[in-house]
Length: 239
Picture 1 (spheres, rainbow, N blue to C red):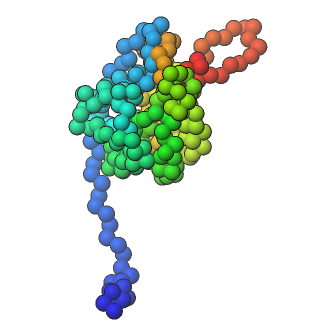
Picture 2 (cartoon, rainbow, N blue to C red):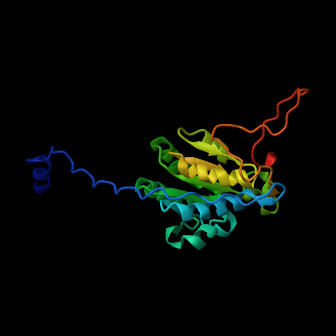
Picture 3 (cartoon, rainbow, N blue to C red):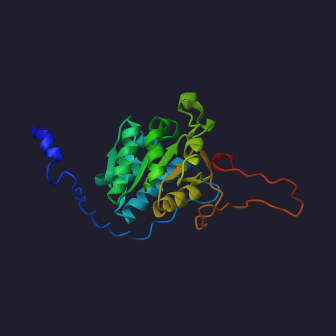
């Protein structure tokens, strides 16, 4: 009866209290260091991502990282070395990792959550909800595709593009070399809303000059002639 009185009594239909105001976002930070690669260098895009993330963390205090216990493979350990207070270990609980990233984004941070691309299948429900809500999360999948070789088929991320491209609001970036991977990491931090970056395990040749500029949603023409008869479109390691 006491509970019934509380549910039906005075004030039962009152408006709920408003949540506390979100703290003001920290300053955006200074310029990010440029990639130092030269054309022809052999650089894995996952390693370029890690180096760019470390540079980004030093320039922007809003950037935080959550990793799924593979920091030495995703190269997020580079970020941990320069910004240890903003690095969070999510261990092998990928759904929790993405959930934590969503929470950090809700508090005004720019969270990068990284693991092998294949393991994001474990977090697909959270990824879907993040897409629908427009959460400002940045997901990075490494070891994508069949090119991971000796790591074996259980580690091959084959579904990641299907998952992220199927969801609303997602920007999907698939860099092809160290320079474009570095610039994709910068672009992801600057974009509003969820972003997925797909990176590869093997070292591949750098094909762009360090000063090359990239625009989200645009392509690069690498070769063309007046006698062309076929257009070949490629991304990532296939370039």
